[in-house]
Image 1: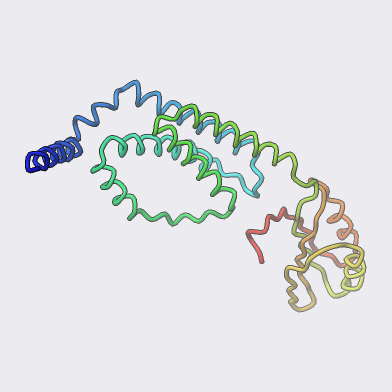
Image 2: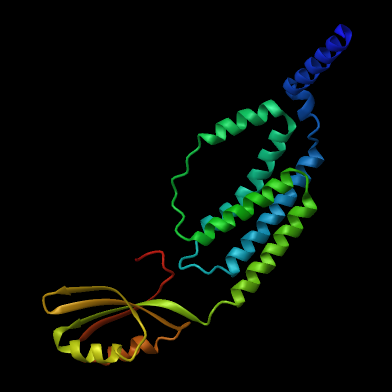
Length: 231
């Protein structure tokens, strides 16, 4: 019994020693393995970049954010390769990453989905599951493109009208024949600024042009509205 216990303790000590032996475990990360993993991550990142670039559905496209998607995919892959090589190093890196705070606001909820997409692709590439990463990235890309073309023809827009008191009656008469949602109404002296949400076909400005013909209307603005900028 004592001999068995001694063998168990020796084996446990050897395993712990190997866990703390960083050089021996990092030696398993050969240069071809690193290049293949990061190359696969870069390929997944480029696919995500192209989907975001050509099928973006938000209000304002950001090329810097799109480049970030490629970077975060590759960065995640080599972080996973590093922490998978040594259990002690992984615990230290998790602790270090837990204190990182990002204060950049993500205005479009869809951007969060692209961030998770890039992180997931980087995770699978770093773990050596290249086929899973490429197939998963391709399937998500196809799904997103299909949903993009299945979106409704009509989109929400903000119609901002600035008019004097003399045009109040005629403007209200025109609005009575429309489906709209009141967002705000500001009255300053003899002038009124009215903001309403309407649904029109893409690139159709006929609704806004009708108000321009009314005497007393000083300004007509039509803005694409996705719901993030005003309650």
